[in-house]
Image (tube, rainbow, N blue to C red):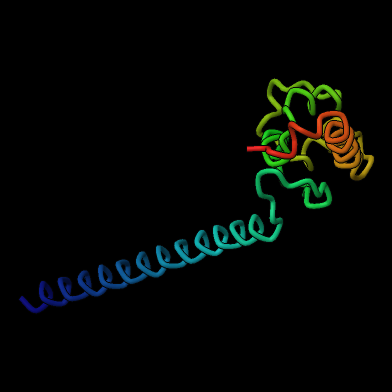
Length: 133
């Protein structure tokens, strides 16, 4: 009987250890992904991009062309066409990734061309970009 009691208490002890470890791992994962979410939210807030914003210097490499098109009131088709990048398969890619794929290592080339395209569109179509949604 005593060996059975020892076996049960050892098993219960291991179950408690395992439960504690799993809870700690779960909490660490919650903290990790919570921090990542908070950092991403702060990054978006710091850019200050609101609909109708005209300061192209607020554009960052993590942004996508559809996001920028909506924020600046410029059609994304125009931006893709001006950059010489096919829209198909590239709508969800960041400017940094597009730069690596289409600028062949020229640092910031896509970003520079995108800013120039937006400025050009804003001078040609000022009434469309002023009241951007």
